[in-house]
Image (cartoon, rainbow, N blue to C red):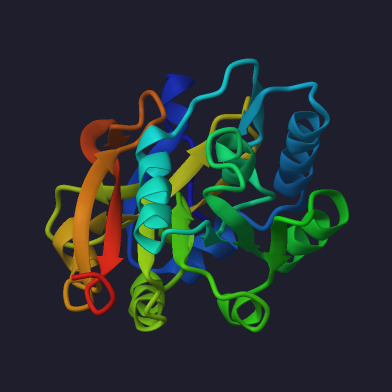
Length: 266
């Protein structure tokens, strides 16, 4: 069993730590993102946003003031301008619609034709029951979405670092040949190899601990250099996420990228 807490300071109990070699052993010891309690808290928070009793939700926490993700919005607007029509968005790991509700005030029907979320099956069931509408849809896989919709842009916001085999997924993602790819809130570090850490979430968000990758940036980008042009890169819009500490050292960082398909847009 991994020992999660050894520091004297409460603050030091939370965040990222370690340099692990085995995803399965780590997730068997601490659980993961599929905990039902996380889904329930996220659902209740987003229902407040949907019903108008809260303005904004992030990571299951509600706020009375929205944080507009302007770099992401710029990517959506540019993509719609290149296509000269509203775009169909696939939001991989999009929870129950957090980014959809966050951006819909800016990216209305003139920008967003449909917002399609790919998530774990229990999220899909909750999304279809409580949040699905004419624009917002939920699917258990990219392949399931593609049977119904043809997304122009795939968004991965704070999700790919929680996959057990991210590079297998990234290679597959590049092969889908989407017009546009946007990564947001993706974790990197300054080491020479990817680093597998344990993330312990502060209890004011929810009680959970799960494996979390910090990528080596060049290796990450290599998946997309052949087929995509990097239009821009940008830091996280969330305060305090530009620099992240691992084992209490500021060696990680959170950023995003906007890729455009070379074969479709010179």
